[in-house]
Image (cartoon, rainbow over the protein chains, first blue to last red):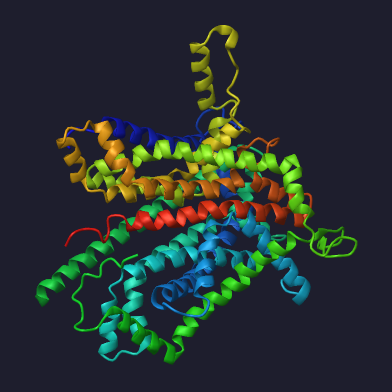
Length: 279
Length: 327
């Protein structure tokens, strides 16, 4: 087909304008001097200045990052275990329930996950006395649970694409199972672990609904802080905060994408070299 | 799902199945296998299955003025089905379900109408452009969901440049008695649908792109050579083959959109709430845990059908093209 698909290109342009105009508009208005968020009143960086002097925002950001670091790491460990279990162990007792439990949270509406965990924590506190107060720990437990299934999906997909004869060869050469896991399986699935961790990290950093149900007094994450302000309407300082977040995340994703594609290219080049040397 | 990349040199005389069971035995002997299975299993039972069963049990409890506000038995039946009866008699719930399903369906259709040509366009641009554009589709998905909804609040508001632009063009087009001072966009079902399309569009584009990318361009050319017009080629060749991708992407938008909470709270019409908001309000404001749980169970039951359709077509969409190539 040599004809230029004019219609398709037009829709693509429209689609990307649709994607990015709201975000760009928000960024431009974060430099608005006016107190009225939507009326232009000249250029100013004062909302950024007031943001940096706001301790509440700093504390909320710190709490969010702490929760995201812990929950992403735990979610990657647990999610990788579940992914390996599903991809490598064809038969074990309760496999059907297990595969159901790693799929269901993906489609469960967040509000239902939220109320179910809140009721669980309240009843657990009634029976065992723990958690006496909801906050950091309960939020982290909730985040681990709903982000681990995303890691499982990523790891499972990678494992089912993996060439199993490598593991088999290592076994034949006398490796112990944990050596196979450490030296063969984990390196092969490491890209999946990295992207799973990043996914879990951003999901945790981004979550509002489940966090709002599992939080307690004094534990305000950044999304919760934004949520409580945004419910009241558009404000210039949220525009500034949003701009900083979008720019940071955008840069991180671009960097991660670039690093990963570079690693992938290198791996392919090395494989090609190895084939050439071997053949 | 056939394992892709299994194209390495096969080991002599060892079927994959047997290799698997040796590996599995090794793990078993060392207890690794049990550890790997049991840890996430126990975690999910404790923090997913039990909380979920609590919701189901709660939907049959009776609301009481105690803390926590529920009980079984007493003057009421031990298992109270009145909540489920209320779902069908109280118009609040019926209307909320209708609103949710309507908004989600309309948003899904618009996602498809915009996402399909975008996905098709992505398969037609050059390789280097394609990677950049795919990155640009995925990028909003990584940035905060809440802030993407918020970005539209800024655009739709009464005094925003976007609203004024729409108002001015309307006033320019129509006779002066129809002139308006602003377009009432915020706090309406229109706003919910628009923002839902905006936030969920990547979920539609990516599976569609995955299924369109695998199509054999020679089929198109063959149909063209046989004299089909481009439009007929699309209808007879491309569209039927991408059907699994359409259904998978559609469900991927529809299912979360129907249970959405953030979008209706921020931009929705408060007098016709969606189901996610009903669950949240019943729970947090009315403190009616049993009713909130009943509505939650009803929503999940409604989503069982779409979920089953999704998982069927997702496998088809992934299976399409792979394994059917000739050697």
